Amino acid sequence: MPARITLITPPSSCKAIENALSRNPDLTSLPLPRPDVLAPEALSQNTGTAEILRIPEVQAAINGHFLVLPCDILSEVPGESLLETWMIHAAGMVGSSALPGGLGVWFPTKGEHSVKGEETNFLMTAQLPPATVSPPSESLRPHLSQLVYSSTTDTLSDITESKRAFPIRHGLIRKHGRIRILTTTRDAHIYLLPYWILDFLNQNPTFESISEDLIGWWAKATWQPGLIPKLSLDHILSPSPEAKNSATDTENTNTNNINLEEDEFMLRNMSTTQTSSFLPTPPTTPSSSSYQNHKPQPQTPIPSFLSYIHPHSPLLLRRIDNPPLLLHASLHIASLPPLSSPLSHPQKTHPTSTIHPRTTISPDTLIGANTTIHQHSIIKNSVVGANCVIGAGARVTKCLLMDEVEVGEKCVLTGAVVGCRARVGKESRLGEGCEVQPGFVVEEGTEGKGEKFMAFEGLDEGEEGEGGEEEDDHDGKMGIGGNHNEG
Image 1 (cartoon, rainbow, N blue to C red):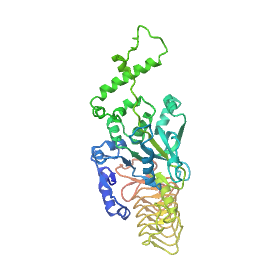
Image 2: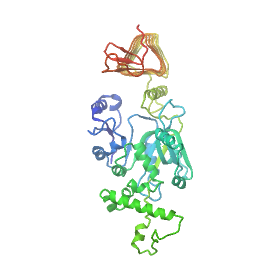
Image 3: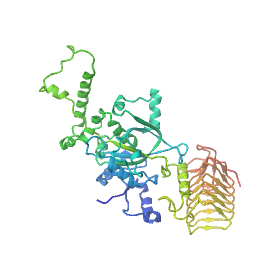
Image 4: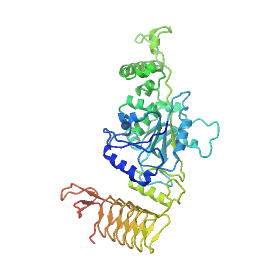
């Protein structure tokens, strides 16, 4: 069956995405299959990732094992390598279970591509059994492990603050003698998931997040048997069709009975006291119905969830979900030689751009289509989008200028991110960390470092916004966070 690509988006963004897919040359030139756009009415910007997979329209679009990708991922790692790794290793990890497991991707936040203040996750992993045959050099097998615990760093901080320590269960140590703890990695939100995971989500309606809820509880269930009935995994993974079909009708009654019986049976085994008249003597005949009730059932084998920890390597794998990360990734792409990577550009300067001969542009700079750069300007290690205008004598270093940006004469921009259709007035100086909102007009002669220039509508006159002093601009909007000097 041919692969299908489905873009899931809130209805408010559906039209813009469809227009981009049909008109943007970078998207229309992508190889087949063309993606389908799905915009369920129940989906909003605040819907959890696990809740998305429970939406009926989304479940109807999934008819087999599937791959989940975020909208902000940037990766030089070949997708075929991840798919091949999952196909080889995920299905046969736990004993003789025929049901496939899952695979997730994490990447380090420290090293060559580190950005200050980036979000991190807390992971605990266990080693896989050694391979019988040495994997090839390009294989991802050396970087695979079994995920046994996963949470956000905020959750870890809450636990350690309330308990003044991080408790580790004895069951985890008994199951896995050696555990690796990672605190500087981040979840890439790339998941290869088996089809049965949809039943798992439906049986656990409180799950909101794929990363923390779905993957976190799945990983713990592989070494914590008490979670198997609580999460309904015994019904979902049962080989008996009758047990699976009756799981919904009998979930509350049967689960409670099983939990009570299991707890009572375990307490009797753990007791160090002698049997007294207050406790009935356990039956000794195998034919007894009481013995049958307390007879321990074999544990349901839980397929493992594998974690691929991307090593420190020249291959970029990042999530781009804030301006500093966007700037860092853009400058990395600009520094790549042409045709050296799937992310590199065939030419650094678009042939339709107009550049004055007396302009200095470094080789690690990208210039978009129909962009005009006037004389005596200096552009170093930056990305300049399409239809931009850079005035005479401007100096732009390590900046990201999105489409249709105008930079005035003799401006000095260093380490700034300027949004689409924004304008920077002449002789302005924007330093490291400055961000200009799309469409915002920075007044002439403005100076700032580490500040955000954005517009707020609907504020009454005299109200103050967060981040600094406010001034009226020509559009009747409020400029926040800038030191505005009149030119």
